[in-house]
Image (cartoon, rainbow, N blue to C red; front, top):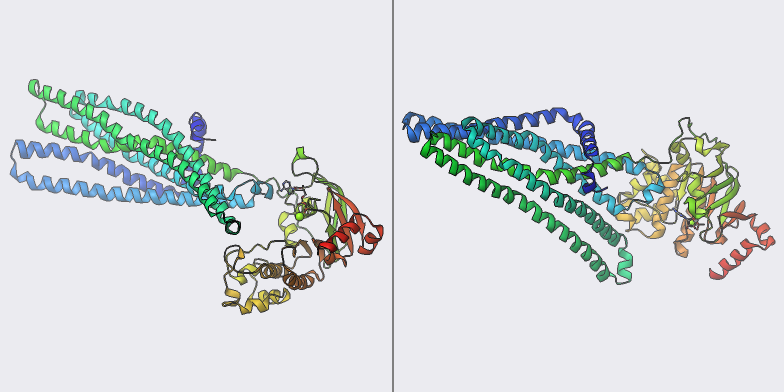
Length: 591
Ligand SMILES: Nc1ncnc2c1ncn2[C@@H]1O[C@H](COP(=O)(O)OP(=O)(O)O)[C@@H](O)[C@H]1O
Ligand SMILES: [Mg+2]
């Protein structure tokens, strides 16, 4: 959806505006009312300025009334100062309102984003999201402030000045009025190009953010492969094309006010001519003319501001539309209306897949077909098989990151589609290949496993995960910040913190997806030790890269091309001399 096509949908435009007013401005109507009041007062006061000029000329210059000199000078100073005060409060209140509206919309945007299901989150490029989040929001803010100011400040001031002009001399006023349609016409023409430039600018900003975030995320590869120049060139070309669009917008915006001035120049010329004619041949007084001219000149500023409204407003409406679209995105995986909390008995947590079928993309063939698995409570089961066989997909389905297309998945006899997502996920602990740490302290990272965990609980979990000793050796111990993505720690250390987190979570079911495959032999040994601790008393499903780590599993399922090819204990599978035996031999050779 771009703003050019939006502008052809006035109904949708007004729906976006109504929603913005209802959902965001409405809650802050007191602030809005105050801001509008200040702007109305400003506009009313503005009308006094030409009037005072008129009196000044009449009383001082024409009638030489010396006693009026001081009151009139004080009057004009007072009026202008008062107007400055109301203008300040009007703008300040309006801008604060707009910032609050933007922050509220951003809060909603992120709240909805993070609650979306994994499939739709995967489709969002993080860089683009950040750019929409920040850039679209500022466009919306500008439209809100300028739009409100345009209606209650600029337009009303214009009306006040024009009213003054019409009252003092309607014929001259009518001449001046012909400017408005000309300006409106020119601005509409300019607005069209401006809107297109603004929309392209938003897109370019999104592309630039993508290039930047990819460069930062890929920094290790960029360094290792010496790709700095490649990366600079990529960002450079984004910057160049964005600059071209921005410069076009700059030219258009810069043209708006001078273009208005040009029309106004013509009008002032005509009016001066007509006024001169009248004063030579008719009855126009000099003081009336002076007030008239002042009003005309003062009308220039609101007219200029109004001329910039249309492009800003349409870009803002397009941005608000996108923001609302993001807010309205509904997750596909939600609790059923009749969902109950998952009940897991003490020493429970049996997992069962019954003839499960699933495809990531309906048209690309099934990823899992007719998969049946059984994991008794408290037992350890391993999933092995070639890369791409569908092992991680089994975990994705058990966690309900995706819903199975057919078959049934049960935990302790309860269909996981019939239980709440919160209770389901609370029953499952996950350790993946790459530990995900946030740039907080180590203690906070571990505590994510259990909100409100005490320092003692955190330490106990870290000891269980064989992490306590290395944490204590860090300069600030548990208070050490781990850096972005935990980069200040080694892979094995990060993994042990993730294990401590899972330990604290104390979920009855544990999923380990190649938890040690990114580690060197020494780290792997330490992490295996931590994992052995973590597995005690839990139902565990292990996806293992190195088959030597799962020979002790109670049962091993061999997945191949989305189906269960074999299952049994290590000894049984070796005896069968099938896929497992060949994988195992291959594994030993490469180890
Ligand atoms: N999010 C996804 N979207 C689409 N296809 C996916 C997704 N994740 C995995 N796949 C595909 O599904 C198949 C099984 O993947 P996966 O379960 O990750 O395999 P494994 O863990 O056994 O290596 C692969 O062909 C993979 O390309
Ligand atoms: Mg996998």
